[in-house]
Image (cartoon, rainbow, N blue to C red; front, side):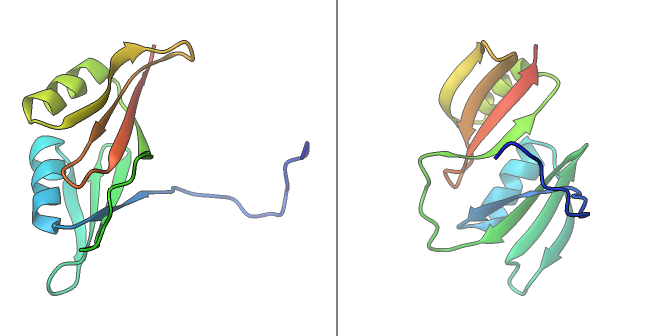
Length: 125
């Protein structure tokens, strides 16, 4: 396919939906460690949460039978990959790929959240 379809539809934001087995534990990590703010929750008990920080938005969905994927589920661009890497290490997040400069122009690493979701982090070099 060499042409881009122009069908008149314009796209807005798209947010990563992360399955979690324990909403409270996920909130402790994404709010307490990563600094996201909860802007919406739904259900009783809570089964869905929207988190925001700066331009980033994450949706957490309660999935008690969630199986850990062996691939990255989201890509997060930051302005200081070294600081986030140190934060992840300090809070015991499992590092899948260590911090390094990539030939495609990013300083990058991959970590797992408490539910095993792999997040690929990048900073433009």
